[in-house]
Image 1 (cartoon, rainbow, N blue to C red):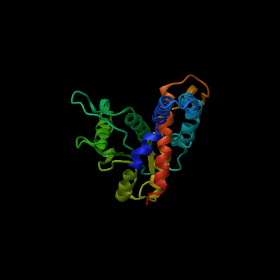
Image 2 (cartoon, rainbow, N blue to C red):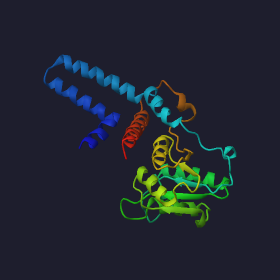
Image 3 (cartoon, rainbow, N blue to C red):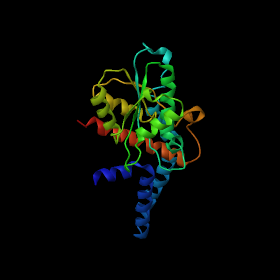
Image 4 (cartoon, rainbow, N blue to C red):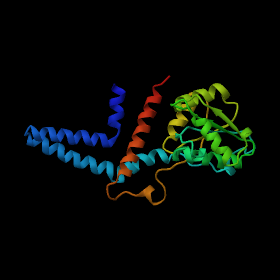
Length: 251
């Protein structure tokens, strides 16, 4: 129950609604002092979460930690790298090919993994993720898409069991340990947590992030009108920081 409450409050939009509800309660109770104070807090909180400054600073603090790999700078481009693509979600629709069923997150990760694989001749893609519905797993959907995009099946490995990042690190370490240099591909905001998880299992991965939420002109925007995009960016960043904190206490 506590975990669900924390997940609820980590969403800054939910916190805003709690404040609005509290203001409404004090208005009905005719407590003008608390009503005015909480109303002012509502306005301040709305501006904090919906304008670019704070969401940008918090999200950039995650996304700026790593940059995509420049293969030419790798110490040994001929090594037998494993490139693990962490699961990013997919749907089901018999009318559509696998690439149309992957989420944008998963497509972005796979795109980065294929870029690296094409430049690292001895590498293999490790495609990861389960299915919550019992249907085609995320790993299998990623593999199908990779094959549609021209990869050989022999260049792919799959792990269909993991339901989350911790399990992805655990199962990979059980299957392969540190026998291959490992490149992790996941979304930029998620990368610090992914690296932390794999280090927990004794693997020192090379990060190559994808799916940057802030790039180009948006990366350094500090002032602007309120938008749901900013609220979403802040929510994503706060969720990652909460998960990073949880991983630190996991054994």
